[in-house]
Every structure is written in C-alpha cells, then in structure tokens.
Picture 1 (tube, rainbow, N blue to C red):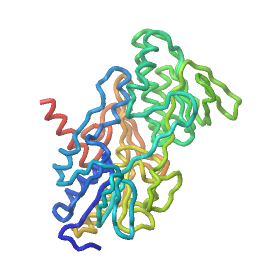
Picture 2 (spheres, rainbow, N blue to C red):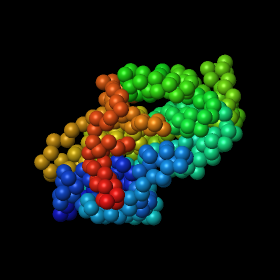
Picture 3 (cartoon, rainbow, N blue to C red):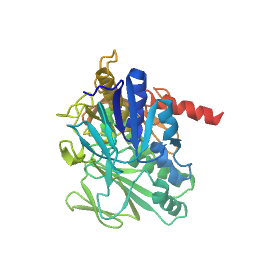
Length: 378
C-alpha cells in the first residue's frame, strides 16, 4: 500500500456507475480519499430517455462532468482508460498518463455489436438518428409492418418493448394499421422481472395489438426478413429493429472473462485481483441496467471506503431493480429482485414505488440529477 496522506482512488468511466461510485465515496469516506475521474467525454448523458427521441421528444439531458466532479471533490481527467498494471497499482490511459492508485474502480460500460448483418440495431447514443426515419415512414403510411428482434445474447430488453409500445401508440393516434411483432428468446415478455410483471407487460402488448413470439432463436439473413426456429418459420416485414449484443471491455492487465466481461464478486471486487473493482455493464452480472450498475457502484464504494479506513461495514450488491416502462401512454413502474439472471418478488404498478421516480434509481446520483432538474426548471 502507498503511503500518501490520502487514499488514492481512480475511477475509470463517465456513466452511471462511475458517478454513483464517486458520490458514494464522497459520502462514505470524505477527506480520507482523493479521487481521479477518468472519462472519455466532458459530459454525462442521461441515455435511458433516449428511446423517446425518434418520436419527437427532446434529446437526452447532458450534464457537465466538470461540475459533477467538482461537487464531489474529484479531479476530472478527460481521457480514455487503456490498461492496468496491478503489480505497480497503476492505471494507464490512451494519452499516456500513469495514475497511481490505492484502489481502482472500472466503470467502462459494455461494447455494442450488431448481432446480424441486416436490420437497424438499437444504439441509445444515437436513437434519433437511427429511428426517426422509421417513425416518420410509419406516420406517412410507407411502413406497415415492423419486427422488433432480440438476439439470444441480450443485456437489457426493455427498450425493445418500449419502442414497440410507443410505435403502436403513435400508429393508433394517426388511425393507421401497422403490424408489430416482438421476437424474443425470453420465455415471456420481460421474463427477467418475474411472473407477475411479465404477465402484466404481456397484457399491455396484447392490448396494443402487438404480437409476441417468445422462446425464439431468430436471425435476419436479409433486409425485411426474420427467420426463426432453425429456418422453420419466416416473417417478412417492412422494417426490422434489433437489440445489440453486448460484450465486455476485455481489460488488458486483468484476467480474461467470458465475452470480455470482468468477473466480480458480490462486493464488485474483481476476482483474483487485489484493490481493483468493476461496476456496471463492464461487470459480468448478466443483466445490464443503470439501477443495477448504481448498486454495484455502491457496493464497490463501501468496500473501497473501508480500505481507506472509513468506519463502514461493506454490504454486498443487492440486485433490486426498478424499471420505468415507457408505453406511449401512461408509463408503468416495474420492480423485482434479480438473482443472476432470474427475477422474483416482482410487481408492476401505475404509480412509482420509489422516489425520485426516475428511469435510473441510484442512491446518490438520482437525487443529485433530480435536484439539478428542479433547479433548471425553476
């Protein structure tokens, strides 16, 4: 261990997990730690709401990272994390910086890839650019059928159902007949949330006239064609919208995990490596969601704070998920406890059971963003 006055923490990333960890550490450890936040961009984008952009809503909210870093006493370094030397406890960046650490938290996110050679693959960084034209073609009557397809390997299926429901609502409002089909390897819609919530979502889809083909292994061999069940079933449509496959960041200097994800324990500590933690989509928890990322970040922050000498007993990652399902009408609020890749004790309600009722539930980041939103509105 190094012997500086304060405990050095390097946080790599500029998304939900990174910011939640920084805020949690500021709360738990205060002046015991000095933080460096290494982020590739200068702003944090609240991406969960980007699914609304193709329907004419405002683009995702942007928050300057310099302001957030200053509020938690962190030094912002605009750079890309490159690799880690765990023996020397040094994080390396793309621009050649060498950052010594007493603890390192990797919140690098996942890498998205198109699972098929055809179809429009969802990317929440540019939803309007990708899908605005499709929605306009629906409104103008040029598109009469759409398939929303999930590959076998998926991280978070909610946007696919949101796009289907919002498209159905838009078509209904314009008195248009559009055949919409969701094709998923799940045994039922949003099965990850458990039986109660899944059945309720299935009812919403049915009421909207959306066909669901579940337990399906699909591929898109050509534009406008979805082949399922080893070629036994083929669906021909005007457009195909596809969820991306997610892969981990494959961090040089750490043990190689399956599909590049970082293997962590229940405290978000990287398995087999001292003083290195990972949270969010880069970690090997199979469900990728901002609220879960924040909980992983909190677990890591508690462990790091304890290392720094803070009087805290680290608690493990909980796996309690809160999700807002946008429908084009009244949103629905889903909750469940997730154990690896299965949900239980789930429910779906028309009013939020948590506050603030945001898309991403994070103990420190959500109230922070809510406060800023209220100040901006005022």
